[in-house]
Each structure stands twice: as C-alpha cells, then as structure tokens.
Length: 151
Image (cartoon, rainbow, N blue to C red; front, side, top):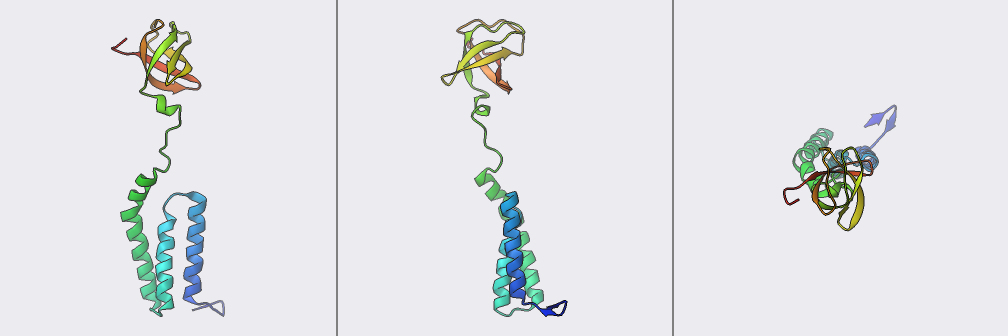
C-alpha cells in the first residue's frame, strides 16, 4: 500500500492500530477498544500470511464487533467496573444500635459494625438509646436511619 508516495505494509498498519487501540483502552478503561485491538492483531496475523487486504479488513471488523457484542458484557460483570461499594456505602441496609438519642431535627449517635456514627432520623421521630434502627442512606458524614420493627 502506498500513502503519500511511501510504501507501507499492512502489517505495520495493523500493528499501529493495535497499539493505538490498546493505548486508548489503557487511558479510558471502558472495555470497548480492547476488542478492536484484538481484531487488529488477528488482521495483523492475516497480513503476515499474505491474505488480501479486503479479507483482513473484513476479519478485523467481524472479530472486533463479535467480541464487543458477545464478550464485553461478560467481562464488565466479572470485573465489576465502577460498581464497587465504598466502605460507607456498604452500611446502607445494616441494623445499628442508637447509643445517643436521636431527637427530631437533631443529630444522635449510632453504633454499626463496631463503629460510632452521627445519625439523624428522616421521620423526625425521637429514638431512644438502645433502639435498633436501619441505615437507609448516607449524607455527608451522617447516617440517615429509620426505626426497625425489632425496635
């Protein structure tokens, strides 16, 4: 292939594309361009085996799209990209014990997983010490709690 009077091998073009796709994937970590890098590597192998350019391009597109459509979801679920809870987020749904009363529109204290947290009740109810509450949200450094049936 000749570009601007320079003869360029398809092998070099496929190698360059694979490197570019890998660099973009490394920068974005979106599990999208990695499949195109794989397609470019397969096309590179075909170019080394002297397959026609049209066959290389078709295989590149077919492999890339196949991997993108049929394997991306599996890898995203396995790697759980962007879905990890922080330690604080993991407290949502936990049962806590009130250790300092929570008055309406006032901050009290709860103990959950052995840690003490400031807490408020969204229901604006008075919750006495020793009462069990459920963590329903986190706002800033305060837990938002609601009384449980076990009380």
